[in-house]
Length: 211
Image 1 (tube, helix red, strand yellow):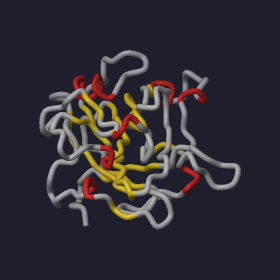
Image 2 (cartoon, one colour):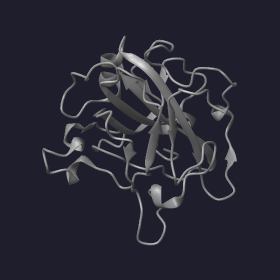
Image 3 (cartoon, rainbow, N blue to C red):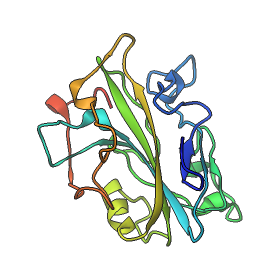
């Protein structure tokens, strides 16, 4: 249980440690696929100027490559602290009213070379996906469509608190791959306040399956 006052990231559609529903993946459920899941946050610390959210595939990292970064699925920055979450299917393309708090939000490219959210692709191993929320003491001065690396660099020294929601996805009957193991209490990714951020992203056999 989180300590009182600790920043919390949650989702009404995905339980922490649970499985990502198919509608939020590139497989889809019926006619609905590849929509971003709803996320909510609580206990945003005093002095927060904005929030940032990054979703990555932890299972995409080659454990033998210490310079590898996880595969990026979603980058959202400069979220106003007045907002308590992002609705299902959120995209900045739908925000056309400058009076809307969401008009301040920027989305960056994912590793599918598209802007905004892209869900997982099934893999024969169960991959772990991390939604990482950061509360920041200043707005990020980044390009209009900032990359993960630019965001991590800009956040350096400005993180007031962070929270993580972890979920998994793979084909039916997929097993958890060895490269998804993460010892309790160990850092999940390189970044501010964590081991040095590197610039390479692992792509096994030149494919994007399992992202």
